[in-house]
Amino acid sequence: MGERIIRISDEEEKVGSARELPPRDRARLHLAGWLLGGLAVLLMGSGLLLALAPEDRLSDAREFFSFMKAFVPPLVTLIIGFYFTSQGSDS
Image (tube, rainbow, N blue to C red; front, side):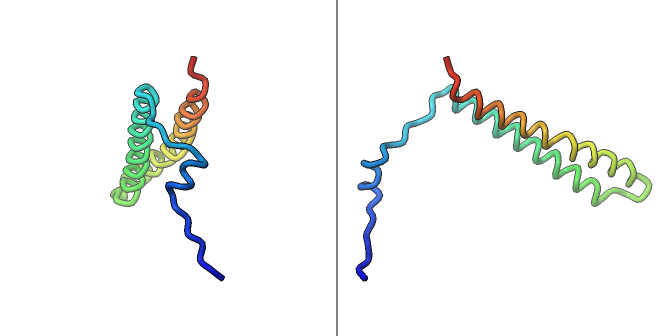
């Protein structure tokens, strides 16, 4: 059995070449990245708050973490859904 050699440059001719994102899409992707990153930091921060909360504030920390657990996933879904559905409908 002989080894088959695959050259990326040969495959690129069959598939096509990559193109750079237009400035509008790049800005939208940048904004979505900042929003998702901020929400991830907020969720992790609330988990850290729950882990490090003093005994007398533990119920408040649990309530805040529960709120963040319910608030962040729908918001992430909304952001990702908006970005990927409106990307193809540029007029």
